[in-house]
Image 1: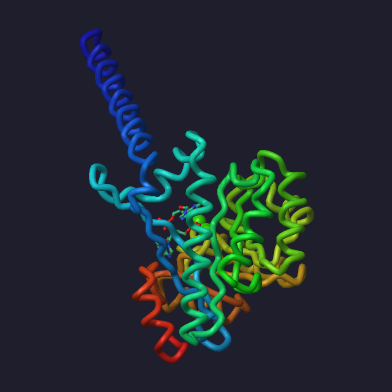
Image 2: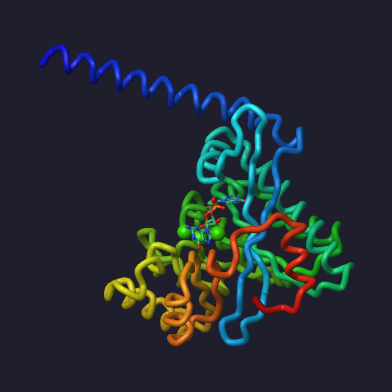
Length: 279
Ligand code: C2E
Ligand code: CA
Ligand code: CA
Ligand code: CA
């Protein structure tokens, strides 16, 4: 038994060592990633359920590093936050998205609204609002073409400051979505305090919405809650026709998910925009 205990311990420390090495490698590689041009924004279509029209996209960051390969954002964003690098990355994403919106606009592909994810820490910076305004102006992008997705985690650190910042952004015409709705602890309180335009039903409720009565009840409640508060509601992670039909019948306004399209690199999304606006 003693022997096994020691093995377990050795195994455990080995795993810890590997985890730490892994983190250090990501930290080291993240540091020059912007300069080496290793990031790319992908765009996942957001569809109107009533008309079937392509309304816009969510911007999702991709990182391809020569040493580490493709690292998913769920992995490197929290580490970037921990290492104080997330503001620089967030600013890079916003600039890339604005440059791209301007290209689409100039090509006559219409005014596409792109939603950018904000991370915790970006609101710790007093100049987030100023940076968003300056970037829109610099690229000649209308504020109505930009959305920001926040989670409770984004604003938790300093909610008062976040409310003030979001109100300024909303005043200039940028729309705000509350992401991953229902997965946190105090969503209803946030709904009351934050100037939100859109609620996103989390994928975890969408997955079994057609087969699990509890998930169906939650999805329906979120839809009516949103509508009673004059918010639009979008379901994320929609993968099947059955989910589309179920949510459409119940008044969900927009959808996003593999059923319609995976996140696409800019050229592929541009090709989609050149087609008639239906999927
Ligand atoms: P999120 O904001 O909840 O984004 C939705 C995630 O679900 C994305 O994963 C998207 O690719 C994935 N997804 C969309 N439709 C489906 C579907 O039908 N099925 C399945 N299985 N997955 C689907 P992704 O791109 O790996 O991003 C993961 C998370 O990383 C995001 O979750 C977001 O929290 C964060 N993230 C991504 N890009 C950025 C960014 O530019 N800035 C910040 N701060 N966070 C980002
Ligand atoms: Ca999001
Ligand atoms: Ca989400
Ligand atoms: Ca989610």
